Image (tube, rainbow over all chains, first blue to last red; front, side, top):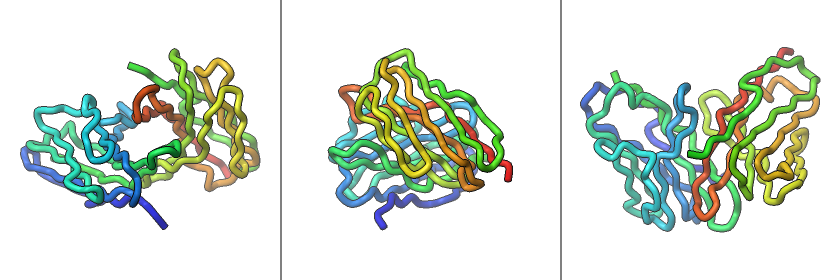
Length: 113
Length: 111
């Protein structure tokens, strides 16, 4: 049963600490997305990659957020330093080349205190 | 930027009732998708629509791609308690691989 895997599922951290979220996309999917979900803003696209190359990170605060794909099986989203306003659920999703639709992981619930 | 507005924002219905919701945009899109999100989970793709006017079903769910290409509709027939969740519409931005999501419709079913 192919699925997107995200770790950790939950993370509580103190303000100022570095946070790294990891994602394993579905094997064979060549587009990977990072979304953030909050009550106020809904689902926002932060960044996405195609064939491991970053195509758009305009939704991401660049001073503290960074997204990378070190290889085809791993995508990372890093926040340094974290702030309370970063508290949200972060989703990774992946999509195959020709078929419509992105497939989501279960998310990482981040709480910054 | 582009915005997808969903209506209603939330709804309570009785088990067995049919449900209708819609999604509208001020821009034209060539593909529309519907997702459902259960509590504590990521959104799951329900239906993808590729062509204006298209009507597509997935079990008790039926979705339509509006003829103006600025809206889409989702109907759920004979609702059951497990239909509870948030339903999102989404579109892929033309010329990109980006998906943007609507504001969501929260469905609650009363047994």
